[in-house]
Every structure is written in C-alpha cells, then in structure tokens.
Image 1 (cartoon, helix red, strand yellow):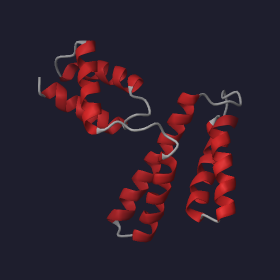
Image 2 (cartoon, one colour):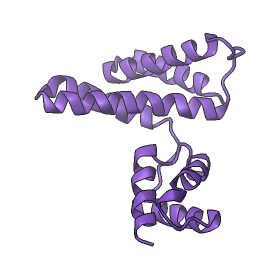
Image 3 (spheres, helix red, strand yellow):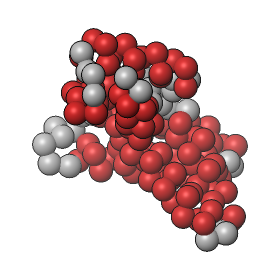
Length: 151
C-alpha cells in the first residue's frame, strides 16, 4: 500500500472521529504528496525513497518551527507543531536508537577506511545512503565528527 493510500485511509478515519490534530497533519502530508506528484519531472508517481524524504522534510520543517515557537514562548503554536510531528513520524520507518546509530556509523567509518576529519565527506555520503529515513542528517553528521575526531 502506498503512502498516499495510507494517508487517505487515515484521513477518513480522522474525519469520522473528528480528530482535528490528525486531520491537520494528514492534510499537510496529502498536500505535500500532491505537490511532489505534480512537480516537473515527477511523472505522477512517487517512489518509496521520495516518500520518506518528503515526510522527513515535513518533520524537519515542523521541528524548526517548534524551536522558534519555544524560543518566543508561544506554547500554543509549539503544541500544534509537536502534535503534527508525532503524527507525521508514524509514517516514517522506525528511527535508530543512539547506540544502534553509533554502531552503524562506526561500521561505515571502518568500511570506508576513514581516519580523519578530512574523510568526513566520504563517510557522510555512505552514511546518508545507508541510513536514509532511519536517522536525522544532523545527528549523523554530529556523530561522524565525534567518531572521526576520536580516532
């Protein structure tokens, strides 16, 4: 079942339950999917990788907004962003724990043969491909820096 079909099913359920939080989030996902499908070169279909990237982008946008709202003490708006993040994340693959991520990145560093900060580009290229959808890029980058500086 494609992401779009899952969203449509959940959207119907949320409408029947009159769940405003879920409706708001699901409509945002549906709009993003429609935009991606109709953009130039998309061909009207989204691959699973593209769906994951799209969802990650939506989560990142909301996390950035959440951070700003928290700095400005706008708890009402921050609460809405947090609710949307939780609902969107349900459609993403399970995120790796800190320990799992550390072992994966360490294995990638060994596999690539990286030994210093100068090799960060090689490691990040391999890590972002292998861990796509399973971890945030910022987190991966920070961990790679930490592990490479520790060698």
